[in-house]
Image 1 (cartoon, each protein chain N blue to C red):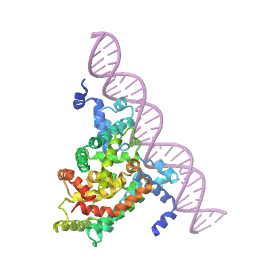
Image 2: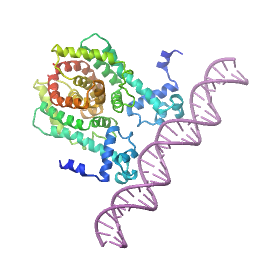
Image 3: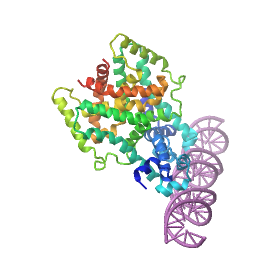
Image 4: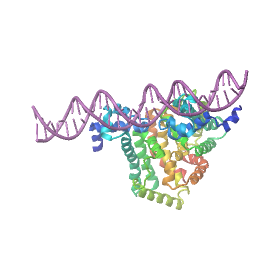
Length: 207
Length: 207
DNA sequence: TTTTGATTTAAACAAATGATTAAAACAATA
DNA sequence: TATTGTTTTAATCATTTGTTTAAATCAAAA
């Protein structure tokens, strides 16, 4: 059967399990999710989880890998492309991540948690193909400073600021909605505003 | 000072359990921590956990409450004080949270996770005494906009930016250290720089 | 010293949980 | 249709995990 077609329509047991697992693991993490919960969510017999994926851990590893790929995809797509100045790239990053996190706000917390326990060695350089592209971005950043267009700050500042401005509203989303009396729709709108605002802000900050 | 002294001297069984539980729960969350692990870490017999705290859940609830208090303390101390313009307040917030998170970087992720599962109803208005003080801050913010000193943006933007700039480097700390080849000491130094930089940045962004 | 109540301990319990098994149902194909 | 390999199921297993128990130890008061 055609693989591409299969993926879209795929209603197979294996796909149902993976889908349920992804939803639950991404939302609640490894330890908070029980195999029986996944089975119920997927509407399948408990034993099929082990039949198709050997163990809960191996299933989780697959979800982890897929989630990291979605998260890295935006980075490599933007940074690998040599065109565009630093602020254009920041805008592209903002657009990609805001759109991704609008779809799946839990992804942010999932990745942050993964960074912290790091049982998957997610910073493994061979695994992580972004090493090169990041170097080019770093060069652009240094040049910007040398040309006097940007204040001389440590890369940790720049990274913290970019990631912080893009990701934080999603990490704090439940609080934002409740505390600032914002609806889902308004929230989405505000996030879309940020796609344009963040590069402008970063530029203004680092002048 | 008296409190710290007490903390050091208090070597009672109850205190040892709470200390171990706080360390582990804050680091790994409720589900990843097992009662036997707490007992070992505290160097006490397993049964004493239930003897002093009834259940794992009740022990966790206490740690949760204490952690939320540390986290809210900075907010109320700064916002309750009517003195100071908005940027002075932002600086005070930055100083408090950066110092707090330097001491305990895991606190950030713990609170974010608490915001998400929210089994403790942490936005409960009666529980949360900050309601009033926040209102005054909001007024200051609106006045700033009406006076044309600040761009007219949604409060969600302001909140996201302030929290994002302060908290994100700690959430992403393990990545920062590894990826940007930064030592613990350098990281601390950079975080201290941010105390002054963040209010300046916020001002520049929102001009 | 004896008594009394509080604390600590080793052992055990019951429920939850991840995994396995053996049989049944199903699907294809010869 | 009969055969064969695959998928699904109900039942069960083994371990983990939160909690309890009953006895032992300790410390202060009588």
